[in-house]
Amino acid sequence: MGTIYVGVGEFAASKTPGDVIKTMALGSCVGIVVLAPSIRAVGMLHVALPDSSINTKRVKEKPGMFADTGIPILLKEMQKLGLTGGKIIVKLAGGASIMDPNNTFNIGKRNILAVKKLLWKYRLGAVSEDLGDSISRTVSVEVDTGRVQISSPGRGTWEL
Image 1 (cartoon, one colour):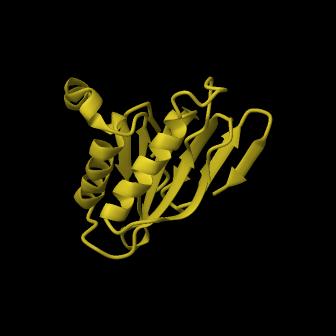
Image 2 (cartoon, helix red, strand yellow):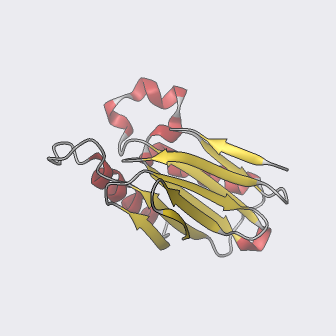
């Protein structure tokens, strides 16, 4: 029972009462929150890049780094907790344009597109999202309630 921190390219899932899963400093990265109310479990993934083909060696070290390898792994983690079907709720945050004022790389937008495309492959779509803009976000999800909160410096805290 406590806080599980998810770093860049990492993922976590829990159904332990009292646990909170949290990721910090989502800039161009996208945080994917998966809720499975039927088994009272939650999961989170912190995706940094859209496609693993740019660095196949890194996939072995940190498969959660990329949307195309991270999402399947997060769903497998949820299955390990007992998810065999039932309703899955997905919420997304991040994908900002940070330190790229001319939109040269569009990493945030590319991450958002890759995440949504992969989720659709699994017939999943986000029920709520807080994407884009130019702010850094911290996201947390509570196992007990499934409540997802976002905070950003200078903007306070809000629920997703």
